Image (cartoon, rainbow, N blue to C red; front, side, top):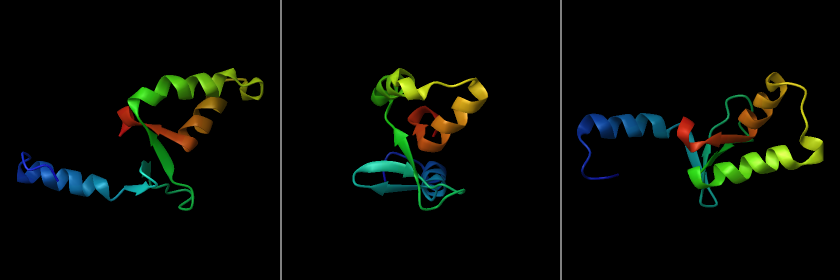
Length: 82
């Protein structure tokens, strides 16, 4: 825990940390819907590559935003949303 944080900031980090786990040096958010499949938190530097791969695959086509968002949301969490 960083030493420069005040008591309130430390308590906030501690509260939020119970929703996350580290597996094989990667950060994951615990998945309420499926506890056996945690959601990987992507680093900001990985976002562009992830979006490219989600849209470049010929089988990755989708009919609407309503169908695509849940797919991405359930498989990866962007660090900016944490």
